[in-house]
Image (cartoon, rainbow, N blue to C red; front, side, top):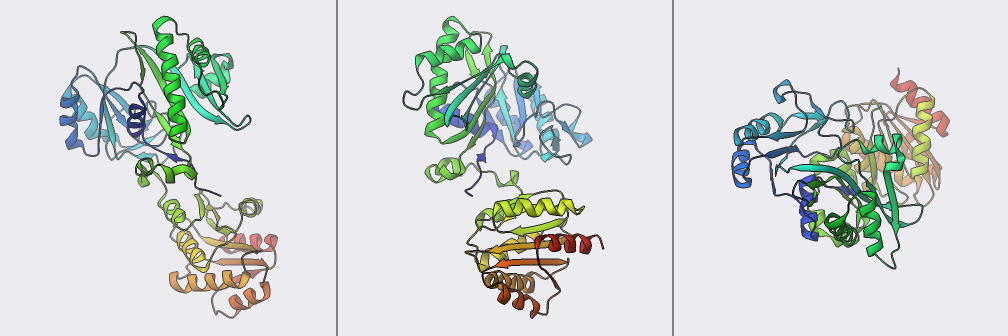
Length: 402
């Protein structure tokens, strides 16, 4: 399983759009409230937009947890430089909850201060990879700026999509289809055709996985303008784009997920209290299911892969034990390529190095299984052995629930 797609912030997305020739507003990203005044002065008024930079949608409708951050959402209009500064002071460091975050919200560590635009209309455009046709696909709607999922659900006829044949690339007729879908004519339709081509070529050149511009606006003086940019990139292609790789914001990822990536482990944090370490994604899913079946919740998805070494096992174990929510650990390994005695030794070494404060159940099956079990049984450690997955799940749930 290769790396996931990588997300970037709006201000970074705008940088990429500017590079490929798409129209975006002038803006300045800041990390400290003390930088707000200079940024606002440099951009010049009369209208500024102060935008929280987090990897989650619905920022405008979001609410901050802290009272000191004020009542307004994560995207705010400011009509004076003082107002820009005041908003920056309120928002930086506060936690924004949107419909796409957990209840704990996401801490806003950066803001993007942008030149305000006079908006006549808000449209929607995105490019994704259509898995069914294996082609790059445009999605367009006249209902931009709003909750596009809601629009797609309630009035699907307002969302138009079409594929691009890779042999022809983006043709003038695609431009016409796009303009029509967005209700644009005359000069705006010309701009739209040009923009469609720029976005399509940029999507391919940068190995994007998704590009969403919501809203794409028509300004009062008749220009098309990308007012937001949400871009993710294919993780497997990042080696070709060191400039994009450099945009990764690790504060937006769970630090355990960042650590797991270094050791080639697939790790996703969940809300339960039983840490799982399994080899193979399918087995990991079944392990999580059976934990639920016996009335507990998994704390993570962790696939150590088929060819894990002792080092990987130790790294995986450290990640599990560093999670305060974990009240018990279940190791479930089916040793094919991977030998059970190596896993057992890795587990014993990891426990000796990290210590064990919670119950640990180990279920091994496959190559060298007897040797593996013997290593665990003779380790003198407080490890519970299990015969099969069902037995293992029952034992760990019982151990955790006392």
